[in-house]
Length: 190
Figure 1 (cartoon, one colour):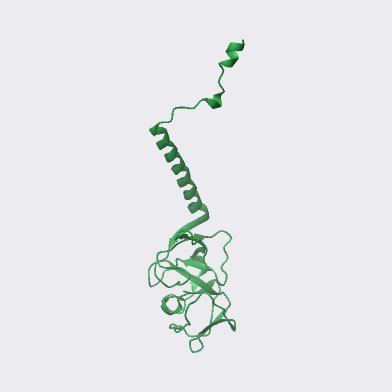
Figure 2 (cartoon, one colour):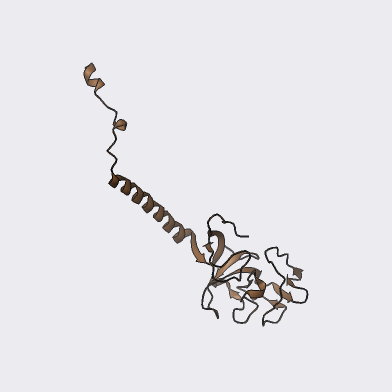
């Protein structure tokens, strides 16, 4: 009986021979699970969006990729959003919400200020003073179900100051930019 017990090998000690094909299988298996995770993430939680143009500089640069989410999203002042409303550029826009329904927006080009409901906005995210007010007449009240958006690069942004874009119907807000995907390592959006 003793001889029999000595020849028993624990199942965990047995290892299949490691071949080239088993390595390939392990890599493909890991890759498949990673792709499935990415698909679930981008299907149910967020969508990638490519930034085209420099209207959001310095916050977002041309060719950045951002993750846009609708989870718990309710349009608020300061949110960076993707707008799918048909417009003169015929492409989605990424802009910052300056005012929501019922707010009154005023732009004073001489003083280089943007005011909402009589209060001048503190805008640390812009790099140069505003010099263009567009073709809209200010002050202007944001209608119900709409928002007023502007790019952070105020002097090179086609946004709600122009009648070509105007107020944005909240039904056309694809979501809020949650974090930066590319460039890698610069996740935070200011």
